Length: 223
Image (tube, rainbow, N blue to C red; front, side, top):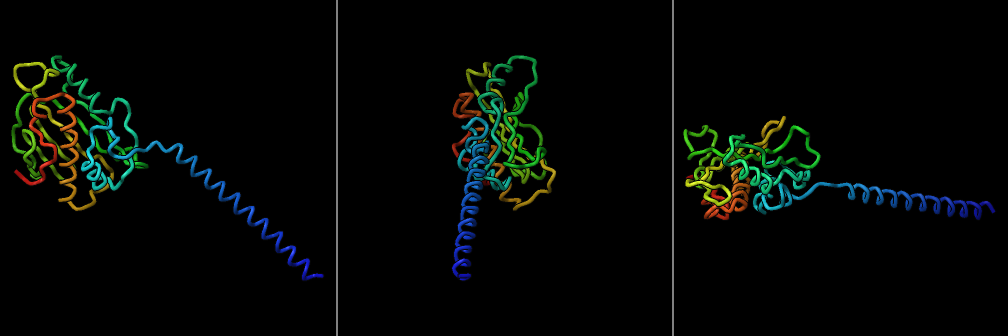
């Protein structure tokens, strides 16, 4: 009698545990779906308007940040918006530099970011670059280091009226409270790749003749 009772009780306890586990599993799944529904992060090729980061540059961003997912860019953080601002202010005395976009790795600190900026320089490159930079054969002058990249190119375009070409400088720089990590040579190539991607996107958006002298792929060997 007691053995029968014991087996029945075990069956009831087992059934209760199974129901509990099933409910827990459903709860976890619902939580995961809820989290996924609120995930606003994006892949690298969707950043900054969706035409600024090439596949190569997306891989380079992972070298720089260690991330493959990023916070979404706002509507003003695009190459198209920066181009509009640049062309509209070209003949005005307004400021001639500004942000293209800021890139934050998913779940990164607010002060850990990449800043992509553009500037009208009003002339060819002058002076010697800082010793940390590698000079690369892209545009009028391209520089890359383990924490920054820069490309200046000349642009003749109906969007930038004038008898002489405009000179545009694109910069990518990391701002971070953390010390630099990673292989300096790989980081340097990564910055060169990312800044080339943005410079080429800007040249195409401005409809510069011959894409401002920029090739479809970055040149990573020194000039």
